Image 1 (cartoon, helix red, strand yellow):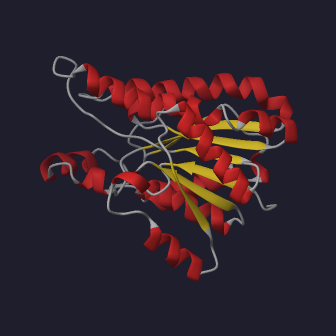
Image 2 (tube, rainbow, N blue to C red; image 1 turned 45 degrees about the vertical axis):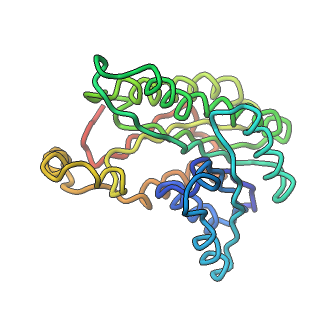
Length: 249
């Protein structure tokens, strides 16, 4: 593919890193946007340096995807360093699990803001440029549980389902302008968040997955990479489940 500029939100999380790495292998210049760059001990510099030794450069940009103005600044910085954003992967997400009876307003607001409001907050700042240039790829990372629901996740499931509603509506708006918008809905992956689930519960989850294992973040990244490519120009408004057959629809 032609060299493109890509931005990945939640870019230094486990899935975000895999997606960033995949896009660099496809020749993209990549900006990883993540609030964790300012709030925790892992600032991504070691990861960035390791990729640089392989000849793959990734820009690290701190920003809060729940804040509209912070997203504007982050996009402006990415475009000043790398060029206009051609590809956006909305991957930022959190969980605050509790049954509805126990879920407080803060847990609802935090998940909706990070997982759903963020999609508007970042996409709003890149969509006009994409349509004006006649090329764009937007991939929204939703979840298996946005399709089938999950006990204790009314907030998370609602946000992830909302992401695909956003996908379908925007896809209709920009399809004739060379911009595609798609959703990828992963199932249970071999990430720290999933592996923190109590062993007995996790074992039962794996038993329900027909392929008999957790997914690998690189498998998600491979699908995202294709959807971001020039060859995927006829795919838009779709929701791709990638969950080992855990939920078929």
